[in-house]
Image (cartoon, rainbow, N blue to C red; front, side, top):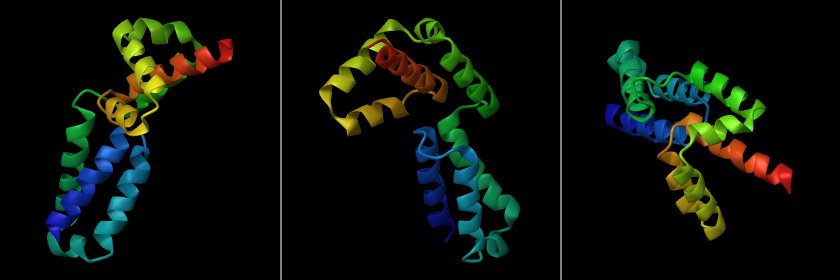
Amino acid sequence: MEDIFRERCDARAILYAASVFDLHTAVDVLQTDAKRPGLIDQIGQNRVQEIMAAAFHAVRGIQQQPFLVKQFSKTVEKNSSIAKSVLPISTVRAAEFLIQQNDPKRLHAWLAKHTRAERAAIRCHFEQKEKQK
């Protein structure tokens, strides 16, 4: 049962990293998943939290902090020039190329390799580009 829970945690962490879920939603569902079959009673709440933390730590990196990412995203949305200064031009060009290819899976996989702040800057870049049309 613990192995299955670990796999679910890894999957949720990957979806979180890809911005499918926010952190609280992902963790709340996992907590419910651990409680329902009696895993918490079997291995203890501390062990459940360790498994969840390890999965999210693997995709978030040591230094990334969600409140800083949210603040950065708000700042980027207010000032599109930040997106250009934060992202290397090669990243912007790669994003533009992938959009032109019309391959959502490839784009999604590419975006998953970038931090939430970078994805926010990329999104902001395209929103500003759309407004200029």
